[in-house]
Image (cartoon, rainbow, N blue to C red; front, side):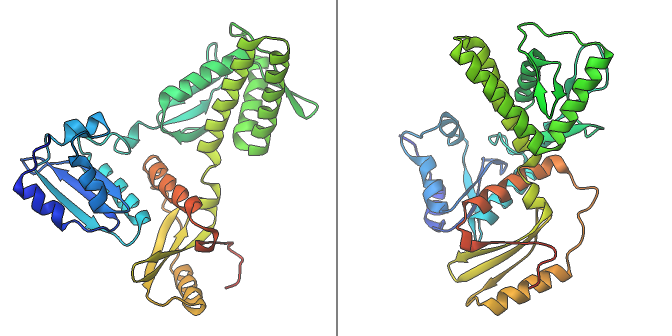
Length: 326
């Protein structure tokens, strides 16, 4: 049974049933874990049950000497604050979001003897991403080698599955490169290649070539991963978005521009005029995103914004085109 000190018991009794972030501290005052929740007290108390669900929690509770927390108005703000603090503090028991500089890019290479695609750590010419999982990209690249060279003919893509990688001369390599640049730069072309892979997969299944069918299936899944990494946040970054989120004392408005929360404000009694004035005020101070923005770190912030937006009911989200009159 977990022993809870009087100090921790008092802290647990103080934590409210509100959204926010919590920080677990060790006996030296070091922050060893940061989490978030829609209901702080419920989440924090779950760490101190007799049989914690996760092994990491079983280890973590042995080091917890104190707990701090910060209440936020919304779960969105709790998630963003959690992400920010994890990146700044890098607590030992947190595994996600703190090592964003290890995120990587998919690169379409120039002519060489070995690789048409590679993984690089910095933005270069003909690179796409960033992506969180280097190992996943390497597996996708390895799968792609089985269908190179890719050829575009009569508005479609042609390829054959090879158990061993097929060598390419410079001309074939450059044609293959042009196809790769096309599908990674245009989502409609990516969809076209995926539909061709699906056709091949079905053909192989009908001919009882299940191993080949599985390879085509894996390639389709790999392309879905790449597609999501390249285009998932397109609307989020290219458009202005208004969020209207209910809170305990009214509503909170958020104006999102270029993937960042530009302004936010609480309204006890929200009406249409308030929304119009809020949008007008937000647009008047809108400034372009800095060229020094850390796009690797932004992957996590954009992911939080995107996932929260798509989880909200339609009436809480308003996408505003630049030309739209308010």
